[in-house]
Length: 451
Image (cartoon, rainbow, N blue to C red; front, top):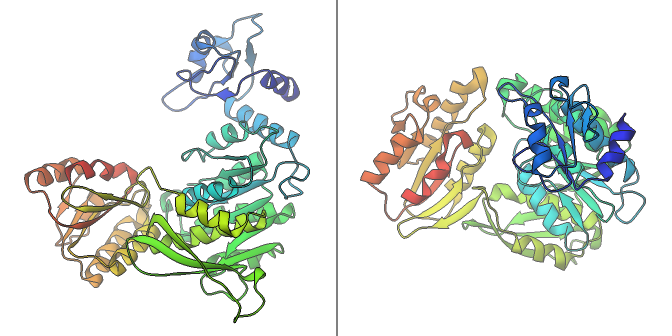
């Protein structure tokens, strides 16, 4: 059945799971959820231009119509089809661009995985035709859809993988079968789904488990005790290190100053044979925050592994500009805004506050939204953030969300962004440097137009 379906896929112009987006001659795979049933839109997908529709509910089947394919489970079929396609274009080994098969780089982590994916794609695109995850399509649907976009003319694929429950990464690596893997970091996020920080480490570590089993390579931050411990527990052998302080790293880097944008120096240790002759390369990036240095070093390390020259790496990273409310600097007629409102968890919130504390700027102001999906740890983690704000001596602070209200802080708290918006419209701040950070659900990304 899978081989037959794959032959139909090869006749199509890609795969879609959205009946509102049906490119001509594409294949529509119907998915079901708690509030929707894609099977009900199969006929509409055909009318919109799809060549075939794959359904898992027989009541929507049109008998004797060759454009319909009935399967047991739409999501599993999507994932199995993607894995089959990935194997047609290369097995998990080898992992050199230009060799037999297309190497796949798998990236996950608590924070920074999307930014690292984007930076890595920018670097590798200097030399190769790169397929990489668009936006944050990093889940059980997005990963197989990305893999199915892979074509023989691609040289390398970069697949971002997200997780919020145990087993999520295992599910995704079994679809994309990476040759090389990177866990950016592990932190206290999605605790409601993982149960504990150890649950986070076990789930992210499923990438390491796959690479260990399949003799793959790991790009690893040598400064992270958690990641080093996870690698040692699994007996990983093929490791390439980067970091700020490590003596074993291939790539080392250090922040040049504490201005708004990340300015740093880096070096390929392998290309220099003595401390005296080492030559630092400088990058003045468009990213906000020292916490993005490891993301930059990871992209550099992967670039060097695949033979991208140092000058091209620097050009790619200096040209990259963030989007989607990730570490963006915005200047309005009234204030300077640091907008990092796409996501937030205790690890990323602490990193943002640390960086903002070190930032050389006058009239600092904080607008922080609550951190979601922390389960029983939520009130405690929000109290830790309030305590950190106090320790750093921030005075001009506004907090948004019920979880911050529960802490009983003396800082102004608003139930939601709408309530805060009314206050800002009546009394807009002037001449401030404002950090805006919170989980995407708090919708703090709507505030810049008021500031």
